[in-house]
Length: 368
Image 1 (cartoon, rainbow, N blue to C red):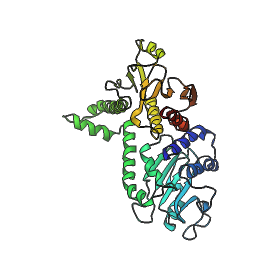
Image 2 (cartoon, rainbow, N blue to C red):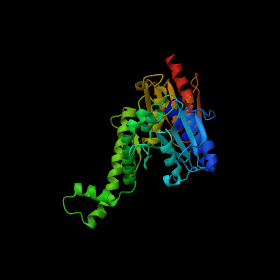
Image 3 (cartoon, one colour):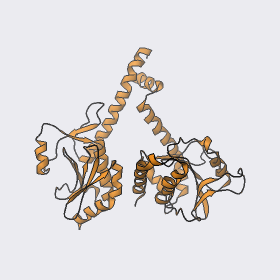
Image 4 (cartoon, rainbow, N blue to C red):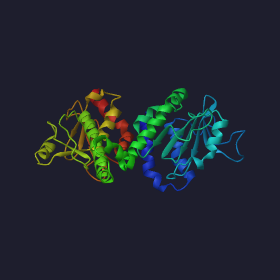
């Protein structure tokens, strides 16, 4: 499995089980150890790779321990401190990470609650752990752009120098992205004034600012919708697809020519097919999975009023998957060698990664 598949599989597990986790120890067993083992690839039962309850020899208060020390090349390289799932991650509650960082060879420290993983290094001062992380992995909303860097910390692809060299850029890009997300959700006064001053030629009075407090988030939402529209055009090869006005988050497109008979009947309805963000994400995940066996350009999409179809060579007789997302319970439709469909319940598009093998087998049947 790729690093992406391993991360999304754990994310699905966390989403399903975190409500039942009530203690820090349960968090470690259910989520943190699988992260170390399944995602990073270290043998959690081999003390030469993973040292639980790690204690340094010098310079540390007696009795203090780090939850896990990960060993690579015979040296401690990564320190991991865990809190209960759902607990806020505050460095003042993990002062031992600071102390251990300075007295071990570790260049990476991880603070986690099993769902959010904050990665720290010593960019600001040598051998002194930074106060802000250079990488934040949130399993509730995985940022796929971070996964290649995470892959460099896995046992099989460990490349500490590359991670440290990229850490500075990752740190500030991550902070900027989080700041932008916060401004899009709830624009600050400075953010509103900034844009108002760029487009309003007169003095920005309090009355004008109040007006722009409505206009700025509306413009931001429309901008994001346009970005979704661009992704949709790329995914569907549809030059006419368009995103409806704010605040809708779906896109109306016509049914593709050559749809199955039942779907052609539906297309005669006056209603348009609605392609959702979840369907676009699901299509991209399916394509990412099967592109290990076939060129990505051969994976096509057709939306209908009942399901979103993923086809090989845009051929109805070569279905790869169907996304039954137009209901409260989502289903992934997969096919056997006789093209019989089985609907598998899933919670979100990311759960598709858990069925990667059957999707690849389907494509393999078509390409021989």
